[in-house]
Length: 297
Image (cartoon, rainbow, N blue to C red; front, side, top):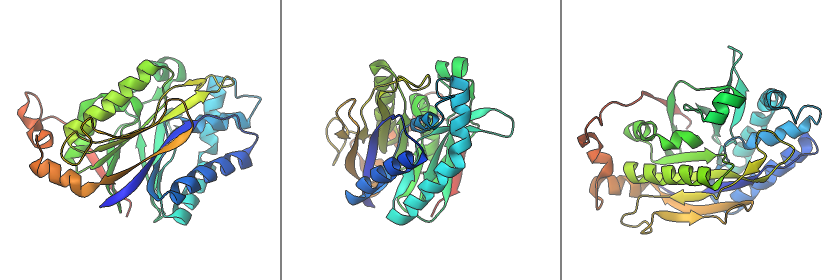
């Protein structure tokens, strides 16, 4: 299946109220849909701009996390409406979600036009999340079976750990979504290199969506560096460097590229190299995390 993917270079804005957020998100989704995208990918922690809806608490890290988590039902309802209206699959910007145990987890939600929703929590926390945010890790990997093929999500730092993506590839993933939030170019390049490496190893596509710009009012996402990119394995029918598209660093924009799941199958069966097939031949290549398949058709 061939379709167009849109990866957001998403600026963190100080919003004047809920209507400002709804207008912004609707404008972004409508722009991607008008450009022919079947899938739109928003970044990690892009939802933290919602903390600005409460000026009294937005400068406090813990309280801003509480504010955003409390808004998630409303945020998700809006994404569901937009997915249904446009016919797009939408990976919403990830957000801290407060769970029954009282702890927060970094949750990315994939909305299908069918009305179904899949959730992937981040599994490996960065130092900032562990030491300052106190965000807890999720406990399972998922692959989403969609009308666009099998899609997996590795949130930011997760993309730097090969066994996570490999388990998803073993479960049939053809497209790996990598939402990120990094405050230095070092961080951006770590995630980008991870995304491209995972595309190489799994002979699949990787879609990288970062936050960009400055938000001095936020203790969580005050500086954001990166460029959106769509990558594939450097092989037949893919650019020599594996880069299908990449944005201009720091600029708020969509980055678009065509992907073809039939090419994934073709390269895994008869590519110039057979990384996906030969994975198990490396010493210790057999032990992988369990993966849950979620039907979003």
